[in-house]
Length: 462
Ligand code: NAD
Image (cartoon, rainbow, N blue to C red; front, side, top):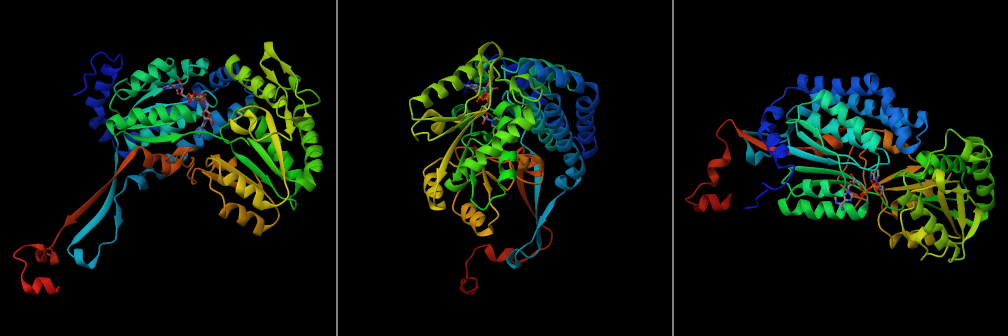
C-alpha cells in the first residue's frame, strides 16, 4: 500500500476523489452549463487578457492568438455542446442470435480523477481543449500547465478559480517538481501534451497505477513535394506554418523532401512568400514571433552551429539577435543526415531541405524513422500521393495543404507510437476521458440455459 500523505497534492487529489461521483452524476444540462461558462470566459470576459498573456509569453501576433487560443477552443466547446447529448446516450450494439433474450450497449462513463499536463507553445489551447472533453465526460481534473509560459498559466489559474470549485477542477502551477509529485498520485487518466522524453516519463509513472494515458507528443514532421506540384501553393503553405508561432508548433513542417528538378523554383517562391508575409526584414514584422526562452534559443543556435560542421549550405540565412530571442527565417540544404537538424525536432523557423530523385528514396528514408505526428504531401498526381500515404506511417496527414487538420474536430488528432498514444479533439477527446463500459441486459429467458450443467449428450450436439 503506497502512502501518499507526504505528497503536497494528496489533499487536493483526495477532495476530487471524494467528489468524483457527484461530478459524474451531473446531467447533460449541467455539463453544458459548465462548458458555456468556460466559453463565456474565453470569448468575452478574459479574451483581451488571453491575447496580452500570449504576447507577453511568446510575442504572439494578435491574429494567431485569436485563431488558436480563442476561436479553436470555442469551436471545440461548441462542438462538444452540440454533440454531448448524443455521446452520453446508450450506444446500442447488435446482439447475436445465441444471446437471444438480451440487449447490449456501451455506456460512456467518466474515468474519474484526471490530470492534464500541458506545454508552453499553445498554452491556452492545449490546456483548455482537453479540459472541455474532461468536463463533457464528467470528470474531476487537476491541471498542471507549463511553468515556461507563466503569464498564460497565471491567467488560466484565475479563470479556473473564477469558474470552478477545487474539488472539481483546479489548476496548480509550478515546474517539473510539481509535475513529478502529481505523477505519483493514482489518477484515473492522464492527458499529457509535450515532448517525447517527458511523455516516456509520464507513461512510466502512469504504469505504476495502471493509469490510462493520452500522450500528445511531437517529433519530426516531413513535407514531401513532388515535381508535379503547384509550387506556389506548396511554398506559400510551408512558409506560413513554418513561421506560425515562429515554428514552435508540434505539427509544423520540420523538414522538406523535394524532387531535385524543382528545388530552385521552390526557393524562389519561398523567398517571395517570406517577403510577402513578413516584409524584407522579419524583425520588424508584427506577424513574426520570438523564441520562447533562452534555453530554446540556445538550442536552436547550437543546431545551426552543428549544421556548419555538416556541409550545410545556407540557402536563406536568418539574422540572429540574442537580446530579442529572434531567429530569422532560415533554409538549409545539403545537410548530412547525422546533423542535429536532421535528428532532433527543430521547433523553430529553420527549414532543412533535402532533395530526392525517386519517390522510393523518400519511402526508404522514412521507413527507418519514428512515425511523425504529421506528414504532408504536395502533388497534383493522385498516384504519387496514394503511393506516399500507403507506404508511410503518421499520426495525421494533409494533402496539398498543411496544419489545418488540427482544426477539424471530427478528425482524430494525435500521433502514432513515438509521436503519441491516443487521440484528441471532439468525440475522440471525450472518448479519451471516458471508460467505454460494456453493458448487457437479459430481459427474457433465452438459449442461455443451454450453458448450465449437466452437459448432456444433446447439449454437446448443439
Ligand atoms: P515538455 O515535455 O518539456 O513539457 C510539457 C509539460 O511537462 C510542462 O508542463 C512541464 O512542466 C512538464 N514536464 C517537463 N519535464 C517534466 C518531467 N521531467 N516530469 C514531469 N513533467 C515534466 O514540452 P514543452 O517544451 O512544453 O513543449 C514542446 C513539446 O511539446 C514539443 O516536443 C512539441 O512537439 C510537443 N507538443 C505536442 C503537441 C501535440 O498536440 N501533439 C502540441 C504541442 C506541443
